[in-house]
Amino acid sequence: MAADRGQFSSKFGFIFAAAGSAVGLGNLAAFPVGAAKNGGAAFLILYLIFVAFICFPIMISEFGIGRSTNSNPIGAFKKLSKNNALWTKIGGLAVLTPFMISVFYLVLTVWVLGYFILTVFGDLEYLASVNAFSEFVSSPELFVYVALVLGVMFLILNGGVKDGIEKTAKILMPMLAVMLVLLVIFVLTLDNASAGLSFYLVPDFSKINGAVVSGALSQAFFSLSLGMGILITYGSYLSDKTDLVDSAKLVAIADTAIAFFAGLLILPAIFSFNPNISPDELSTSSVGLIFMFLPQVFMSMSSVIGYFGASLVAAIFFLAVFFAAITSLVSLVEVPVAHMVDDKSMDRKQSLIKVMSSIFVISILAIGSFGMLDFVTTLPGYGGAETKSFFDYIIDMFYETILPFIGFIVCIFTAYRWKFKGLSDEIATGNSTYKGSFLEKYMNATLGTIIPLFVLFVFISTVLRIYFNIDIIQMMFG
View 1: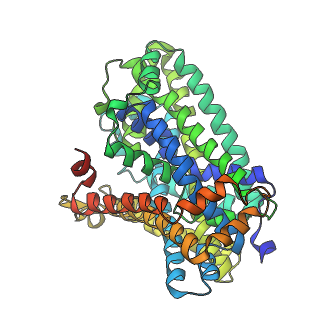
View 2: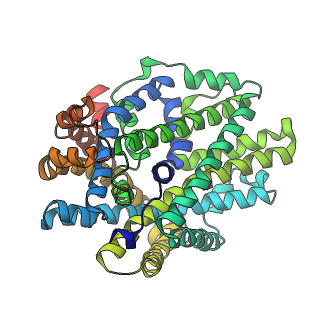
View 3: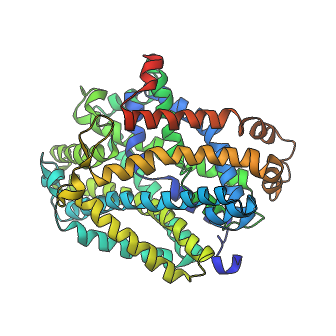
C-alpha cells in the first residue's frame, strides 16, 4: 500500500511540503495586521509561546497518527480506534473540512492570480482605485482564472507525492523566501520605513488582554495547518527513519519566519507612505489588506520609483502570495485525494478528477456569492447579521469553527484512545532520545489536559461569537 500511495523522498522534501502547507495568506497578511493591532512584538511573543507549547505537541501528534497508519484521516482514526464507528466519522470530518476549505482558498488564490496578471499588464492604477476590488470579484473573467488554477493544481497533484507535491514545494518555497527577502530589503530603504519597523518590533504589553491572547492562539493554530487533516496525510507519506520532532521544529520555524518577514515587508511599506496611519485603519482581514489596501501602497511608490517600478514590485509581491497560496491549496486537496486512493481503491488520476470536479462546482457557487448569483449572495444570516453569503458560510463553519474542534479531538484521541504509549513508540521510531526526554514528559502531561482545554476554549468562544454574537472574551476581560 505504501508504495502505491507514494512517499516523500527525504526529510527536507517533507519539510518543504509541510511548510508550504502551513505558509499561506494568513502568514502574509493576517499575521502582520494581528501584530500591528495587538502590541507589535508583544503579539509575536505570545504567538511563539503558543506555537512552542500548544501547537507543537499537536503537530507531532498529527504526524505520528499519519505515519503509524500510513493512511488519510479516515483510515488513520479507523485503524487506531480498531474500527470504532464514531472515530471513523470524526476522521471523515477531518477529510470534509480541508475539502470545503479548499473551496474558499481556491477563490482567494484565483483573486491573487488575477491581481498578478492585471499588474503584469499595467493595470496597477486601476487595482488601486476605490471600486476595483468590488468590480473584480464580480467579473466573469474569474471563471477563466479558476480553470487556470485548477489546471496548475492537477499537474502538481497528478505527479504524486514525490514528483508532484515535494518537487513543487522544493521550487516554490525557496522562491517565496527569496522574493520576500528582496522585497523586505527594498522596502526598508524607503523613507519613513523605520516608523513601521518600530511599530512592528517594539512590544506594547499594555495592549495584551484576553482577546489578544485568544487571537494569538488562533493565529498560531490556523497558521500551522492544524486540524485540517493535512499533517496526518503528509505524515502518512513519511518513512520510519524520519525524526518527527526535528521535522516539526523545522516546519514551525519556517512558518514563523515567513510570517515574521511578511511583517517586516508590509508594515514598513504602509508606514513609509502614510506615517500617521493608526492600527484601526488597517483591515483585520487578509482579503482587505492584500486586495484593497496594498495596491494603493504599491501605487504610491510610483512617485519614488516610477509606475513601471511600482508595478514590478507589486507583481513580485502578488507572485509570492500566489506561490504561498498554491502550496497551501495543494495540501488541502491532497487530503480528500488520499482518501479516495486509500479507501475507495481509485487510482490517483481518477481521484483527482472526481475531487477537483466537485471543488470546481462548489467554487462556482462561492465565486458567484459576491453578487453574480443572488441565491448564494444573500443567504439567511446569523450572529446578528441579516444575510450571509455562501462564501461566508464556508469560512465561518469550516475554517473558523471546525478546525479548533478537530484539534481538540486530536488531543483527546491521542491521550485517551490511542494512548500515550502508542504516540511515544511512534515518535521514538527515528528519534532514539525521545523516550524519557522532557518533551515526552511534557506531551504526556499536557496533551490530555491543558492543551485540549485551551483549544476547546477557542472553539466555544468562536461558536458564540460567530453564531450568537456573544463575545465571551470581551465579557471576561473587558
